[in-house]
Image (cartoon, rainbow, N blue to C red; front, side):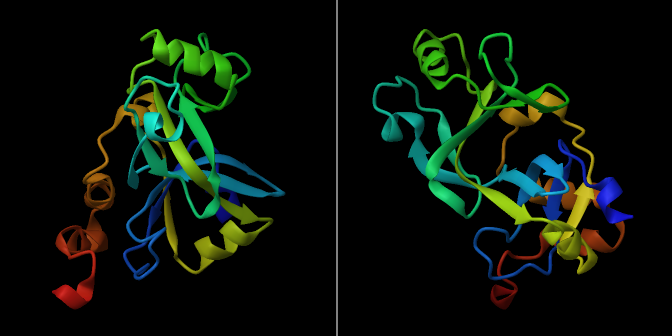
Length: 186
């Protein structure tokens, strides 16, 4: 059953057929939570033109901000791999944590104790209501795969992330690895 495969910490890879949806076309989403009430994830490969310093001037760092998804894009979220430094974080899986004490986080970034490979910031998130993600899985909108990067996914370069995932899937997906993002430009 599909919902058995849906687990927090897994990756959702957008099917090549998702075209014209700016948020989800060629997206790779880290599933941060999945339960009977719904699901939450963060798009890992859609950097914005902002850095954390642009949004919060008292943070003296230029960590990129990512488009986490279309829900609550006026809110800042973060995942990290340093729970020993950031109190009150919630474990997703594989040494990846969500949120935590933001005042401590700001202070640690300014002191140089948090590096960009330790933390990733998002504006917004991707959310699904109860059974919504399961229905999207049944209509082949997403491919679910284990996160083989574990907590190193936080520092993973994103430029070709979707393409790399499609190549790893192989088979019928290989043809899509070199297709243009907009097939009308082919």
